[in-house]
Length: 471
Ligand code: NAD
Image (cartoon, rainbow, N blue to C red; front, side, top):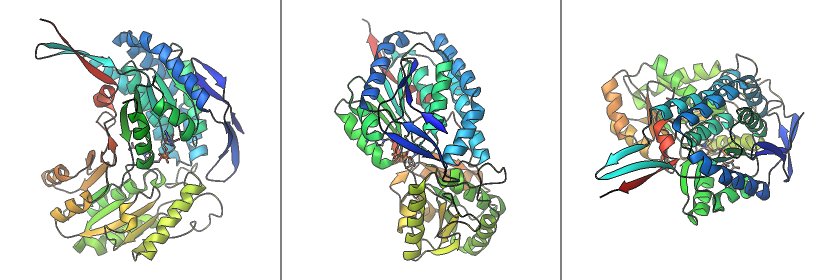
């Protein structure tokens, strides 16, 4: 049993004073621990600690911060096994995904160190000298579906920019968050440079959004919550970055190698048990190829292995909690009610699984882009196949969405795929791959967010230019 009853504030672990919440293993529904959440006063203490640390951090040299990032890389790497275990136990990520997250968490610091080493903080513009300065105390708010990775990449960029951080992981991922806090502590940074408090959005998240000592918010989560944060932060004109929901399109062009493209598009959609902001949840298929694609989808889904996330053969684990399970069932029901053609999966658990929040990997065909299952983010392993006639129609269907986080194009002709990529309203377009590049700018257009993370764009999101003009 895990007992978590501290927050990491000002260089030490201090008791939290909020309510107690259960931690449940989603694969077994067994109680595996309890967390005493932080409350608004704990959040204020964390902000005050960061405020005290900010000026000294702002005057550190680039080399000193590179060294801090290298230390964090090492201390987080040393906890990789624990992060992987927690991601399986608390979240239900299949082994391969949990391994990726645990490795990525330390790599995020290495990437940021490399970016910082190459970055010029002073540059000319007209008659001015422009100095890039840290924006100040930064609140980093993370969701539960990629806890360690999101915390690591936000912190790495903030620290590279010399911003002291207050981190609010989701209240639904306390074990992963606590391991990260222990790793940060082991790096022996000056007290207050990194603070981490696990609490609810209504208390800790809200305090971060309204407190005048917070200069910037880097938020990852749903579009609904992102708007609440942006509104709350507007009073203090905080610098707000939002990485939000998605309903990404995967476009299979008529010249694509279906033997490669169909499995890749499905894997991109079922990524992270379908609980991925970047999941390619709408698969656009040339109408003439639809029968062939449907056969291939059925064959691929039939060989997916849903079950114990610890089993190396498992490709899809449980949903993270009962609420997620119910949400996914709701959308499958909605798809059936609205007349979509169920070609794989369906309601309920897969055969042989009697407990755990396991949903069936589900695919609907004959889907119209106006149906709820094509418009709303389901955040589970439920994909839709939408037919189209021409590349023009594919682009307009892909763009006919509230969201614009990521898109995927599959084609044998690079130039044709790139021409289509140019027309897609999305923060990123991946061509013939589902593997992201963690140095490339990441973020959304439209209601998928504001601003970019990762690499030099991530670093600059924590900086503000100051112009110095001398006569
Ligand atoms: P969520 O919006 O419910 O919560 C995200 C975070 O916001 C949590 O830490 C939560 O406690 C906090 N929060 C809640 N209310 C708040 C408030 N009033 N003020 C401040 N903070 C508050 O999202 P979730 O369910 O944890 O995550 C899933 C969502 O996140 C999906 O929509 C997914 O697409 C999105 N997501 C986006 C990205 C991206 O990079 N674009 C990455 C992962 C997840």
